[in-house]
Image (cartoon, rainbow, N blue to C red; front, top):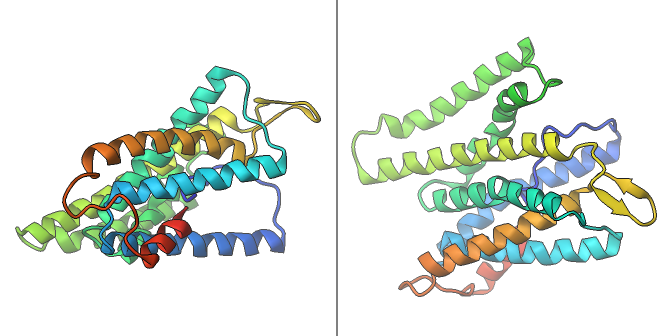
Length: 256
């Protein structure tokens, strides 16, 4: 799931296998923008694509939870808090990105999504005491956001037209999605990192692992998106409920 992005999570590891996994993750996440575009071009609505993405993702996470012996928090308040974070980590950014790719190229969407760590630097500096903005980070912020302005300026200066307007709105939607991802990452760092929120019968109280954090978010996100898709897309002319062909099925399976 692309939504489980944690740029603010600390880690003491720096092994070659971690770099390999990082590269593979970048390839999977980067290609997801292409497969979103493919699914949309096969006639699927953006909310419908998100629906399948979350349903498949939830099934994979349930299997991983069982295989790894994971446990969800027994405290209803903690469980509800984790699920609620999924609204800003999954529902908002997934919906915005999938909608945006109706009007902008997948490559441009992936580049603008690179603003996530830049937004995270700003939000973390406000919300976390151990993440101040240093000189290096400030320079990176200025360069990164300047690049985003350059990308957006193409449609800002294109003159009044429907295509230019929708293109600009599509780009701004990805920027907003990036900010939402960053906000959720900082929120998860603040609420969950290092806190014993799971009562493990073998190991005793311990922090949540990534699957235990992701699953409640994906389930709640899936419920919300299914309702939105059923209300806004399903039943509309030319908006299929099921992937219409093998390529569409492969695309949503990959995304999931």
